[in-house]
Length: 255
Image 1 (cartoon, one colour):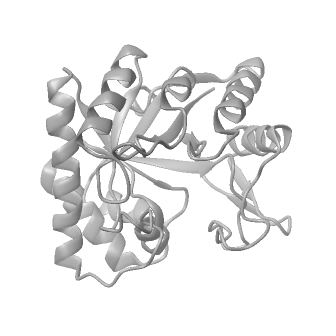
Image 2 (tube, rainbow, N blue to C red; image 1 turned 90 degrees about the horizontal axis):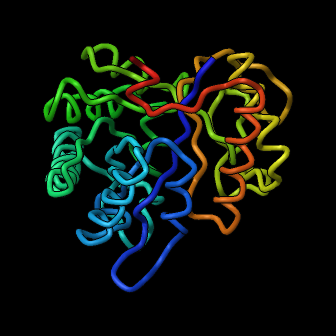
């Protein structure tokens, strides 16, 4: 049994720091790198990619709505054509930065509000998929398990990976509990590990009410922007490996 472990990184900006990317990159096997629209900048992107290369971590673009001050977590009204271009612009930026480090971008994972909306909006999901494929048909589309983006990626013949979250709770529809609600986040490391083991071993999400939702699990995300993120990631990796689960890069997961 194998699974990918990913984190959203490169979310510092200028002189402002978020998270401990260097420590996280020693734990996870895939980095989703902010492309400057919700966080990150050209210097942060290059530093993050270089550190990922040093650790043998696969690299993906983490595009968002153009909402730097809102950290990409505020809904925006954009046409579907704009969304396609929005994806291509950010993916291309990271590809250019990665090339300077001798690295390759192998996947795309949308961030924040656009990710949440596209999980249930088939038209938006399709626009994101078209934007990704317009850059490269070989890019892996990393999207929430069971979301509209999974089907959208398959329809345009992109390689697709299904993602679950270690530090978030789910509602009965299989969607993330909104961050504004008190039970949205999982802060206890043991609880997070138990959730992850169940999802990976049983191929199912269990909602906050106890509903079991079958799904494929290719990748597990630990968000990098919380104070205990690195400790949680270490705990989860150790627990998975103790259970006999190999932790691999995203391309290796689908290979």
